[in-house]
Image 1: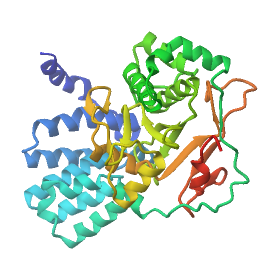
Image 2: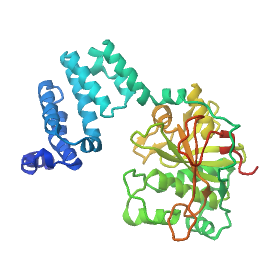
Image 3: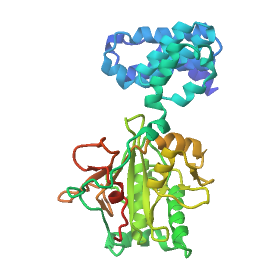
Image 4: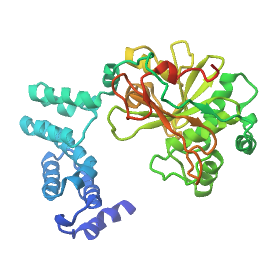
Length: 398
């Protein structure tokens, strides 16, 4: 009944629109979500109606300034891509390729989907479509982009870079974190690797991920936990990684939160952790958002450096079978590593200070500086960027 009433009320709520000259980004999105998407979802096989609905949307938006179009670009990428599929199915090849080109122009990047989408089979043999698909690959085939990236230069000077430092576990704030969460019980009495996994999975199971949530003003583990419980909310990947980082530091591990960045910003970046294992003598990949760690063919835990290198060279990598997003979506190796993290491993960024309340702004506090590991010849910025991988991932005990 609710769904019926909603559909019935749509004409009353949205039947009268302001002149397009007065539209802003919100106007475009509301119109698209209320007047376009419901028609498409209900009538996907009615190709004539689909084409008419999309063209009416484009016509209403034709006089909008570029700034509004850019800020609502997802509406246009989706609309033009779906129109291309519709026209391809109708056999109107030239118009379909025109629409596909417009989808790319507005920011469509899902190369893997376009390459396999059977709706586009009617135009797949066209040379112009093939050129557009090759163009799309340069921005949307993330594993291909990562494989083409330049290597690192372990001879590059690091004299101008700040050193990485780690707060000692006997710091009073970290002692408070350890006691507040009873981390000794959570980590367990097993070996080092089991403790690393237990702390990872505890944060993953305790804090819900919500990428659209606002960051709390106070960003330490206790404050993040308390605001999530008080407001029944989640936090984004950065906050989850900072919480896990403090838990590792409190338990005596050397740990960092790592911002994983794409070559060109597309949709998002991702923040995970690197925790140093003395057993393995390396920085181990752990991701609290997905409850994920990465292994080789023998089940050995891998670090960020190894995972990135294996993805570049096509070697075997896999995630743990129980990795998931909020216990709702399973984490697969194909999506998580070959697609999502291949996108987000072009640049790796860490704060020089790793400690309690790292990014909470307090008057007079020394804030962390950020050092980025970049492919040779492609610095992320002009300040603290290096291509010296050996220095970036050096043992914190040497």
